[in-house]
Each structure stands twice: as C-alpha cells, then as structure tokens.
Image (tube, rainbow, N blue to C red):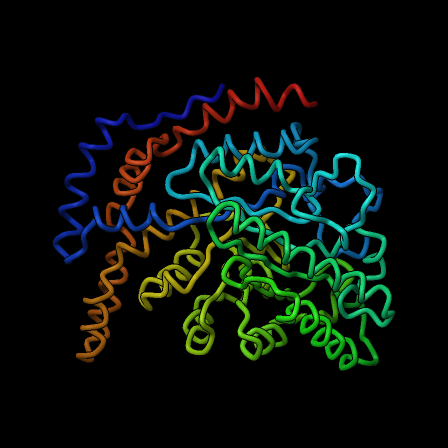
Length: 430
C-alpha cells in the first residue's frame, strides 16, 4: 500500500477557519460556495470501467469507430455487475451529487438475439434498479460505433439508405429508453448523440453526407415518435477528428452548433474534441447567447483530439469560471468523457471527477462582483491583479472542507481505499 499523508478531520477544520476568513475579506462566502458546488450533479461515464468495450454479445471490433482506449492496466470490468461495482466504488470516494452516464452498448441482453435498433428499456433494467438503490440519476448515449454497420466510418450520414435507416431506428429506440429511464428515476435523462462519420483523406463531396445527416437527425427527433422531451433531453456532440476521420468529420462543431440551435436541441461541447491548442471557455458565452442549454463533457486533449483523464488545469478552471461569471449553472449540464486503460480505472474516475468538482468550487469562490466593478470603472490593472491574487488563495483548505462535509476522504485520502479495492477486487480479475 502507498503511504501518502492525508489531513485528519480536525486538521481540515483548523485550516478552514482562516481560509474562510480570507475569502470573506473579498466578499466571498466560502460556506455558500461549498454548498452550491456539492449540489451540482456530475454524470460519470460508465465506459472508463472497461475501455469502451460494452456488454453486448456482438462480435464486432471498433474499426472505423474514431475512438481508441490505450493501455492494458489489470482489473478491467468484464460484466455489468463489475462495471457497476467499480462505479459504486468511485462514487464512494467522490464529494457531491453524482449521476451515471451509460452507452447503449452497455445493454444486458440476457440471451435476447436483438440488434441495436431493437433494444428496449428491459435491457437496461439492472442499470435502473441499481440507480434506484444508490439514489442517483442516469443519463444515456446512442452507440454508433463498434458495430459491423459502422465499419466503413459512416452511420447516420451513410449513402446506403438501409444502413442509414438502421441507425435512425437505433436513435429512436434509444430515445424511448432514455424516456423510460427518466420516468422511472423521476429525473430527466440526457441522451447524447455522437457519431464517428467522416473520412481519412479529402472527400470529393462534403455536402451530401451533411445533408443526409440533417435528414437523419430530423427523422430521429421527429415529434411524431411521441417521446416526452421533458424526460429525454437530446444533445448532439461534435468532434474535431477521429481515427479514420482525420480529414473530414461530417458532424463538425459548426454543423452541430447550427443544427442544435435551429432544432431547439442541446449542444454538447466536449473539451477533448477540439484542437489541442483551442480552449473552449470563450465558447460558453458565445453559445449561451443563443442556445438555451449546453451539455459539457470535461475531458482533455494531449497533442491530438482525444479523451484524457481530467486534471485541475487552467482550461478546466476557465470553463467553469465562465459558467459562474455568467450565472449559467442552470443552463449547463456537466458530464465526463474520457477513457484511459493505462492506469487504475477507479483512480481515473476519482481524479477526473474530483478535478471537475474542484473547478466548480474554484469558480464559485471567484470574486466576480468585484472583478466586474473594477472592469466597469476602467481599473483593468486592478482587475488583473485581483484575478492573479485569487490563484494563490487558500483554495485547498476549502476543497478539503467540501470533502469532509460530503463524508469522503479529503486530499489524497482516497488513494488507500482505491488500493485496497484493487487488491481485493480488481486483482482477482487478472
């Protein structure tokens, strides 16, 4: 077992008092910030447990899917029960309100010989029962990859009407499943749509695939299907590129921004789906000037458009600062999307989710009113100085208090429970 010292509850309490007083000097209520930060839901993605493998009986691989998990760390989940056990362990170590986000390929078919266009709520009954037991909400995703009908890199924008119709049916049935999840759990289910469609090199015709994609989504989201959109909240997600779609992605950022706005659908911004040097914090106010809501996936690109474990970086902090400064918490849905098979997978969950929650708390401790007042008075040097000062405020003490109030280990106190779980549970899977 690794020995990394963690503060006791008494130490946390001793450190919090002076930190709270320091923030109060700037008119910031640390207690209120903690309460609000812990109440904001974060949706954990189920696919970190098993490297996006899924639970289907299909024998397809993920060629042409535009995604890849790298590494072979021991302890990968091999069943629905193991996926849920790993998620439950992660949740035990996380402060605040959590949800869980499941992909359609995590259906448990129990011997049914059905394809993805015939999935039904019963195939997710174990997920729903588990969520009820834990008292958490569930979100959902269509799975347009890791399937023979996705092998050539096109799904909803496919030129073959039969393949395109198959994926449209998949989208419609997923909407029905999400609606039922929302109904049973009495909490709206966010259904995110991401497709891998695109090509490796220059296409001769960029237009036709995008027109087909518009028509396919219009068919999937048509109100005549009778889906209650108060229970199933549809979102669409772009990507800069993927494996096998390096040059052309049909569902680009511009495409989905326009589609979501014109169809009153939620736009998803995944932080790992843009150019590695492209930050997205400036996009928040730009999009929310027009869109009603945004779905945000916290992730991280390293050198290429990808999905690395979230850390408490400038990019992540700046995104949540923008949400806080625009008072847009009720217009932003927060979820995770990364998959790293090179490290302990439960540890990846805890690191990424804690980093996201830290960034939320950090943003809620921002002296926004003072900054805006200085800016309005033309005191821009003072504004910048105050922004810099807050980078070295005693934030760690406030974060530790948030953990203690949630009944979870502060600082690195979660590492020993993670290692114990690895020794008792994950090690037996090797």
